[in-house]
Length: 333
Length: 112
Image (cartoon, rainbow over all chains, first blue to last red; front, side):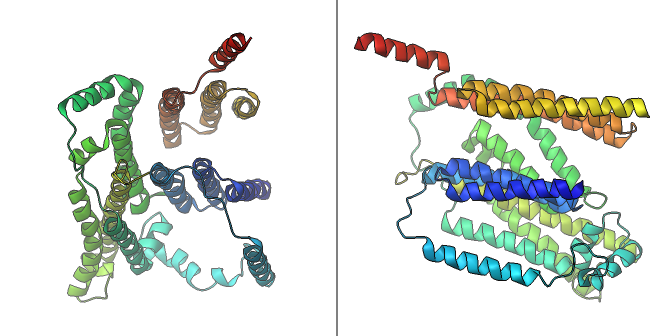
């Protein structure tokens, strides 16, 4: 039964991917991408990887879709017609795909108990994690403690993405102020136009932020952690900006604040490692953060997850600001 | 308990039936607004039935509370999303089927 569900989901994934390739309407393509991410999240759940499924659903089917839709406002909906022949790329893709499939024929059966991937590091983590780290969620203990250096790299990569986007686009402040009549008309239009959306947004946004905080600090006990929490909190503020206007959102969370927050998250994460070094152990060795090694592990994991959550939230919201503030620039379409 | 299992499976099957009929309606209805109506109404009732069926499978613990929260969230946001969709279509100038046929009849009358 589980294989049947997997088969159906993978078939739907392939159909969606094929449809994405042959569609020329980019709005529909963005929606299909969101469906693709959601189907991947379902497949991950069926493979018992709920943390990954959570991250995939929130990032792929959530934030990514919103950012691509904002890009569509700037670039336009139709894909340009393809002028060159696609015979050579098709041949390259078929040859590479055949080589990859031929390479997988030699691999051990899927999920077999004595596969090499289950032999060396994984049993050690599974057996030692309750004794060394003591968290119920083993994914967090591997992500934040055993492989904490890799997660520092991931956070730095997210931060570098923000630097790239802000350096290329920047958050554009409005240059010309509207005249008084235009401002008055706009204010009246906003007030009477979107009653239902405003009420529901005011109802939902505090709950979404609360849920983001819950996911952030519950990552030790269930699926969750910094990445998902940062994305969910950013989604709440993006909803606010969409319903109440970008200028109002600037006043609530200013772009300068977000730049400082993004850097602060990575700094927090790295400084935990430096504190470990100052106490005489290796970089990012949490055992020395408290008198009891297990308590030290818990402190270390909570603080670095906070750093990850802060950085991801600030970066996602900064990227949204950078894209959305470009709407209405003078030399745009 | 067998009775709970039977009721829960009936609710789940009914939810699946309504979800499927909503999906069929998305293809078969002639106009955008009728399609949105089909999708949103069947989506709400399918959510209630499926989560109701799942509620009966839990044993009144934390999972029950979580499912109720999910149901509340879906009931608030899903109709709002359909409302936003229909409102933005109307704002963009999309006409309903009745208005379109009325315009076509008027154009035909003027042409004759």
